Length: 161
Image 1 (cartoon, rainbow, N blue to C red):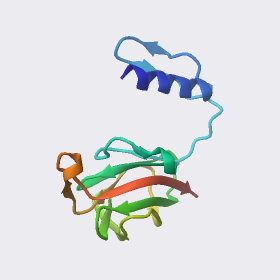
Image 2: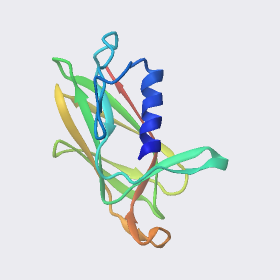
Image 3: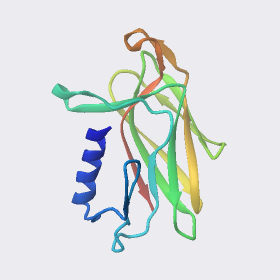
């Protein structure tokens, strides 16, 4: 935990956040720099396993089990078109990856096994906070103490227009 937060503090310093507004043993709060543009963003929600890597190949990824969440936030007063790109591969066999945006069907991707492949999803994101859920059939992996896994994601990018 200490090592993780030391890394976070280094990143915040590189981003010119300045000192924390509040800091104690359990919490540090920082002000977002005023010169940052206001724009939509995407970040990981619940359901993602820890980062793994294959250093000799320069690869990093996170597995998901039965489901994982991507959070979207649109701070603007109007809807924006979002293009989300996932570089992903499924566990052992092709798997359908079902997407729901705030509980409504947002499509299905057919994720291939082995090599990372880039998939693209286009959504209209209304103002406010949203949950994009990724659902896939998972199966236990003996190499992970039978933890159920389905899809590993190498990279997620988002473009809002």
